[in-house]
Length: 115
Image (tube, rainbow, N blue to C red; front, side, top):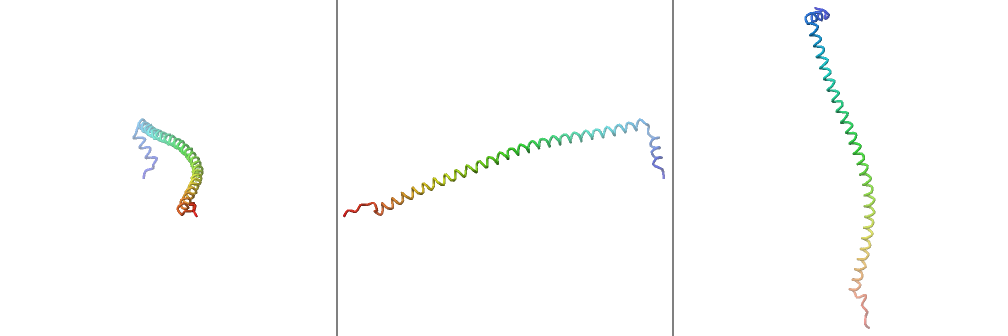
């Protein structure tokens, strides 16, 4: 069995120094291309994350505004409901008085008897 160092020496003896250097340069260039791709992707991810943060802040502001408007709507609707309830009671009382007056007139309560 051969020693790995002997194998290296055989490969070294078979290939010229220029070929090994070209292979090393090509490998480094390949690694640099991969590093550039990774850097580009990281840059895109950071840009996307920052945009998402801005969108989240906008949504939070809109949500806060909606909560504020909902509270105002609830307050106004309660006030309007009370006013309408009072108005309905007033009309109910007026209607009841009119019905009572008509009923009394129908039964002759308001007729003067001539004796």
